[in-house]
Image 1 (cartoon, one colour):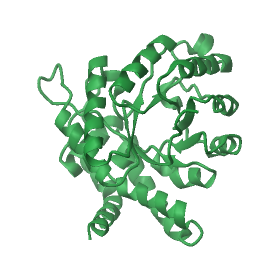
Image 2 (cartoon, rainbow, N blue to C red):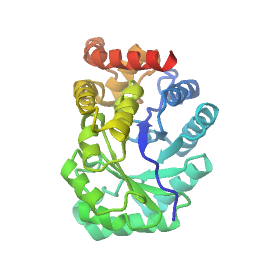
Image 3 (tube, rainbow, N blue to C red):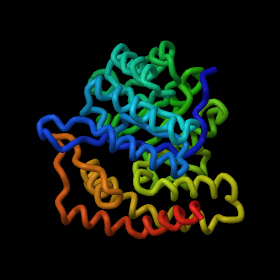
Length: 321
């Protein structure tokens, strides 16, 4: 059996770039190091590099490896028990395995893989194609596979719950990130898989508690980039005190929904990075062709997340006292 994915909070980190030269925007190693250490010091259980938040599609192979090596070192220096997940998505089995091998050599412990979707009209939507793709990759992968179900970046291709349950029996497929928002589907998967061998993760903070309530074991939330302690606190409360602190759990979940939408959904990666620049002092610009947010958009996002940040600051103060 492959090593299972431990329950918890795993943050999908942005890839930070230097502003100059503008036509190249080289990877900002210092900002990546700073951010990973910030997240690890907040108590997260793992880091995801090269996911959608990490602008994986904007990076070449050398940059992907640089990001992973940088994150791995920062994690080893700050929280060596935290797990490193690498996004390793390509349309072919061969290309996906190539990225996975590079990721494993750069320190990644798990590979998160999107289903192929380019030839959606002809074949990729067929369950037998998806099953064959994942099992062939898993058969040869040197590290365990996490399915990444995100219809928003795969032409709305949504892997069926029956296919996911079938894939979960593979010894080298250990989990799924559900960025589909489908709590009912998550409940079906949790009811028909072994939680000791297959870890289901919510893909966003706004539905974290609903996913937990049907059997999810954690979350991979972009919102955690500015408020990691809130997510860790929610996970802790639900895992250890669900029966006697339900109102507190509900209140925390309710307070982050609007902030999560503002931070990540209003302006995507551009808005996320702009908000981080204002709140954390780093974030920078997305890589072109994505455009930066306007000053007005940036201010609107910062104002919308302030109530959640107040809770985050209280938790930070509590942990340091």
